[in-house]
Length: 618
Image (cartoon, rainbow, N blue to C red):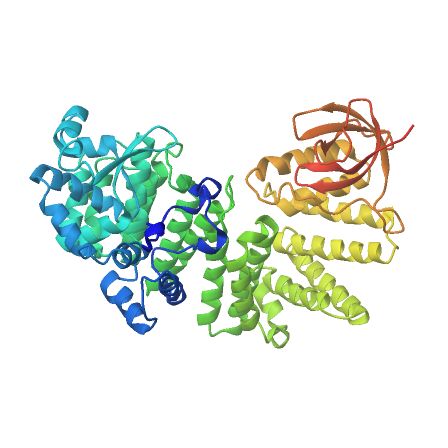
């Protein structure tokens, strides 16, 4: 064609990770990445590119309007239509394609389009069950006849056979042309899912995905009654934790609290192991149940009943904060209860009490969640800080809180404000504020010796003072022993409530004081409660010399545990009876058993670890 002076362009559209550009010899200047819905700049890029190739004579807003109006800003439809304008418009082709199908093939295509409009293929078992046909009948009567180039079969990585249309846009436009009414789509979905088998992992994944992400989405085409009907229809046949949970959320949002409570409690009773959608842990469901009680409390006019619901909500949030999967929603919702109550409270003393409880939950979240989960928590803390702006003026209410609420919350909040301010102040002022914070927290513990918030804050103040000593090279074993005593006191009074910060500091400080077996016990317990915590492997806080430099140790490599880890016997610490783990494969020498090395020690949630391992020359 080129030798005859004929212009042509080859358009290749594919997912980014499936490009084989070397084989196709595509130059960088001819590669463009687009979303399906084109932005203004992407439209201009396509128009300019086709103009350079001679397909568009003049550049102007005209073509942008065509893309928007005729092709719904779709990349697929734009390329299809602009490159070959002799073709019929895409809408007409889709209409002709659908009308050419037999009644049976139209039914199949409807089913598939209702799923593929959300970019989801439908699994073979679900489709054949809905059609009440066999594998052989489907291929002979439909796929190998009029639907041959309209319905496509694919296999996923697990070997499941799935069906889809040629492109999501084809499915979307087919739905919009022939069965755009939400009630009709609802009936099609229920027809397809009339006999679900949710023990089939792929089928469960597809049904949960379409119901939770698309049917129950806030931008859903369905009204609440239609959504409720679909969830009820499926859950009465094949309930899963995820579906019953989200049905409960739907009822709770509509203030159908009794129905929602029954559904959420039902979800908790259903087996957890077989669920695919976010694993739908107890923590997730308990957080939803706590939110339900919170909203019941808000809507309650009788104060005594409201307090009962608030108590139920807090119990749910406390339960949701424990377990294998750290749940930021539980912490946020728990703190938000107190924040919202403080906002509405007229009595300054009671408001102060709510603020103190909110800040305590915020601090607990910071101690137990990884940094990438804390955005909501930090935002809420900012709102709390703004509300607590006049905290100094309320200091006289502390005694009232002790008497009225039998609580150290006032002392805790006052101490926290002094401590937070100290962290932002210069040396002299900072020391005075630290002393005042310690005085406040000790006063709270004098009246309420087992107050967890005060115990936690006192340990943080001592840790801060210890870090200051290290920075000024004045740290001594006596003060570390004093800090360890504070931690053990917290541990004794914690009544089994073992927190990440407490166990980590106990393990680390015990190691510094050469209580190696105690350290091992604390870190073992910490490892068992942080197995899903993103921070558990993060190394921090090296052991330092009196001059503030990382301390060097000597040892011998014992063995290689696996491809990543090995063990070192520390010869410098004679009383240390167990080996230290180190990363086997990150050094510029090949570690071997019996090799003598030098190293430093840092800590993570698993315990002490040898780092910066260096081979010793003989």
